Length: 212
Image 1 (tube, rainbow, N blue to C red):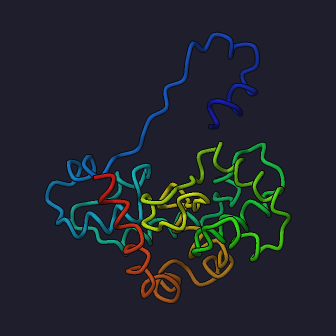
Image 2: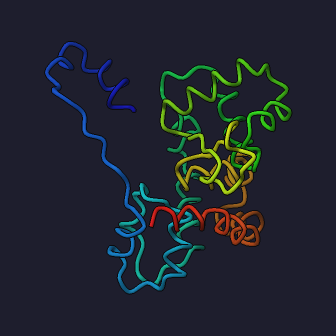
């Protein structure tokens, strides 16, 4: 998205010389297996649940790494002074507080329009506009029926954050970012993530199977 909007604005007239944009997809579960051929299936599923297919941290992961190691690498990145919470939102987006609140709600399990509406007490029409903007920026997606294993969602659908790492961030870290900076990644992982990680991975496991 940055290439299609922000970069074009930065280079001005020269953008007319761009003949097209090729969007690179992240690693699929099958490609993840090829990347780490000695890893057990169980470890691959757990790591993929945390890193998804887009993470640059794959270059820092070894065959011996476990899920906790991967999460701590992410926490170290999020704790650094270079990281800004707005890094995960489009640069030109307005009202980032509202978008971040929506993403926290979705990551915490409030995945239907009505659930988010009740949590935020926001006008449905405005909320729908925010959700559509997040969809158009490839941050969330709307799923229906069999895609989420819930027949009640056939017509109304349910939302989820597309990137696993982003989902982890908004589930565990964003609401407690100040704590992470104070106590560090090791203590933060132990206190807020370690015991909850199996449930997080279990939620993503069906998605892994469908993609694989």
